[in-house]
Length: 349
Image (cartoon, rainbow, N blue to C red; front, side):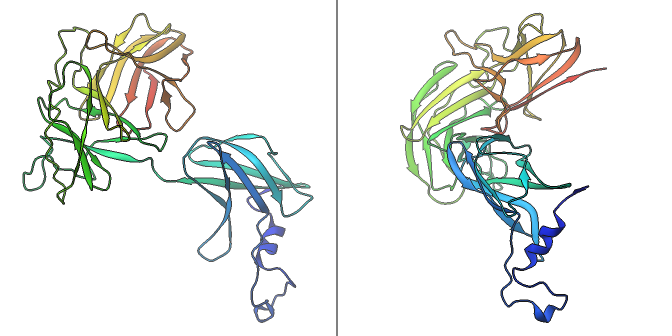
């Protein structure tokens, strides 16, 4: 008989000492005892202790909280100790476990009884910076206005000084652009123009004047030029890499496409500024595919994304995406939530 929580442990969690039906006879300081005495998991090379959670009525929940510095979908069991020595867990020391939707199920068994517990990973969002441009207007018509709820961002997937993200510049041209600290205390700009479809700048750090306006001297550029390349169907989306330690910003004009044995030839995707998604309707056959950029300018670096098991479903180290059945598919690519990138492949009909 499967139970969501062991009944005998529920009783045990109420108090340690004599159990009585009369509330007046309860000890002055009852001790809550979790069925899991100790659980240590290693995430991204760091060890963390899973802490039992209490409900609003102060009774024991069947969820343990794992508060980590950097989130992951994988963890390794470093140690596990159960309150009842006769009970067994569905994992052992050294096992790798997978979190789905930031949760992992821990199953305990004692005799014929089983109980499910959930370890929930809690973490701080990756560090980020706001992107600002001339055409970002405030409520009073101010230019270079940062709206924390709407402004585009770049972020650091490794929680360090290196940030990246894809920025939509399709609705503008020759705007000055800049980067703003997440606490709005400072910003970075460069007085000069972008030369071509890939370039780098050593940005200048400036203190905020207060408020949400950050007038940038540049860089500026012809952000929507296809550089005379016919394969560029959706110009105006740029990848930004920024290292806060060196203050160097690198820009790359991107046009995304699908390639691989499952598709007859490399096919360019179309970008929607409204949804901020790249998409392609195409026929696929059994095989594999990946996402790749098409060089906008001569010598531009090529980025290739494959499937990843991390919080970001795509990465440059990712594997081939398998297509098992022939048919017409809608493929979408979502790069709008850095540093986590995602995709979907849905069969039509």
